[in-house]
Image (tube, rainbow, N blue to C red):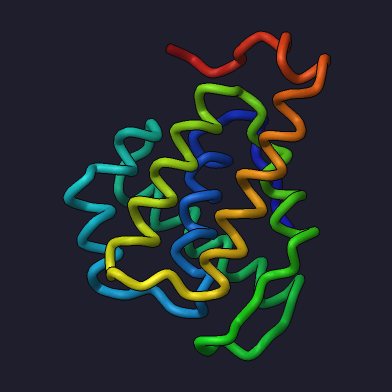
Length: 143
């Protein structure tokens, strides 16, 4: 799995991309929501750079965690946790939860894989950010 600098736009975009593929497919409604909400720009990336992150994630998932991509596709929660570890800025974590929910709920259906991804992110970041070392960690994200 490729890695990105902590709290980088690419690391953040990969979390949103993970929400996009968590149910085994990316719907046109989700793509439209990405564009309409200008999510790539909000993360500090061009639309093309976001697509590159999404493409890279899909390649990595196919190599790292081969699975059948269908409505019951599941991404290993440990793998999700590893990707979530690249983001530890509290404000960015909060924004990513919001953006992921926006994308996941765009089609008015939250599949099991999407729910698992969102709950894993929420629990992972809540534990990490509520710990004494996580709560006082300074932000490394550019303003």
